[in-house]
Length: 109
Image (cartoon, rainbow, N blue to C red; front, side, top):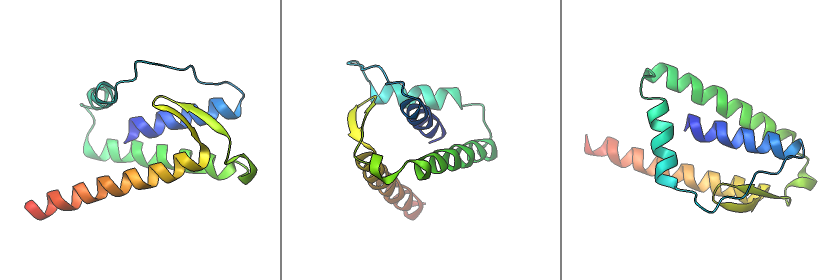
C-alpha cells in the first residue's frame, strides 16, 4: 500500500502543479506490485505501517485540498484516465475488496 499511496501522491502533486503524467501503454499491474513489494522487503512490519500511515495522511490531505469544482478533472494514471471523483470512488471500492481478503484470511487461521 505504501508504494501505491506514494505514487498516487506524486501523480496528484504533479497534476496540481500543471505537470501531466506521461501516458504509458505498457502498464503491468503485477510487475508494479512486485516492484513495490521488493522495495519494501527489508522493512519491518512497524516501518511499513509507518510508511503507509504517512503516505495515506499526505494523500488524504492533498485530496482534501483539491477544490470540489476540480473533482470532474481528468487525470492520467498508470492504468488510464479517471476523474478525481472516479479515482476516489475506485480507491474506496478497491480497499474494501482488500479488507474482505484480509477478513477471509483471518477466518482461515
